[in-house]
Length: 265
Image (tube, rainbow, N blue to C red):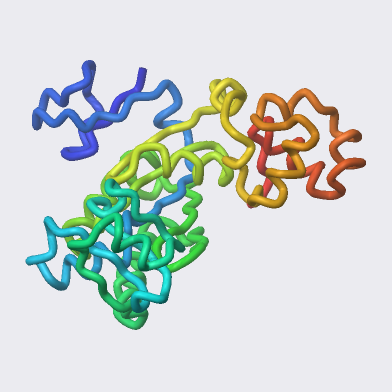
């Protein structure tokens, strides 16, 4: 089992607690130092930036969005614990969290913070693919020779730099393709670091709802459910031709993703 302390970055760890700094934030996985495709996703980004700007809000619920007739853009984790979610009508969010501080989005500020984070990413690899202001894929293939450390160590160092230099936190998903890296980054938020290796891919996906597949929204979920497909395991029981006949070109994509295969560069 390969282990890494996410705080002091030592790799000489044999238990669940770092022998050097005492941190319990140890990530362990058999493939930890061989995987190179990552998804880095800032935690409740807009709200985190606002809390950075206004430290007095650190322990308060914060909602970013429009007026009472608008919708929630994002919410900090304190508000999320109370049930507030993105795209929720603001009146409903305030019913769940009446003491929340509601702030209008400041996209110019968020864009500048995003640029700072992107600069830190690009210092590791030129293969950075932004998905939005607060998330990106990173391909760290071949960077070990340049930086003298495996991708997992570089990523742990990156999120530590983001936290220390920029003042927001981020979660990491590390895997062997983009599809799985994006799933992994959402497994242990906030400040998470999750790994999905090659050996466990199909077993990991089997009991997950089909909605975990990127691009499967409510409409497609209903069509899949009508065909008796509710989990990724259900999807794998269909052969490729049958899925293509039923769902067109999306059927072929589903067949591959159900097996954890994603050929995107």
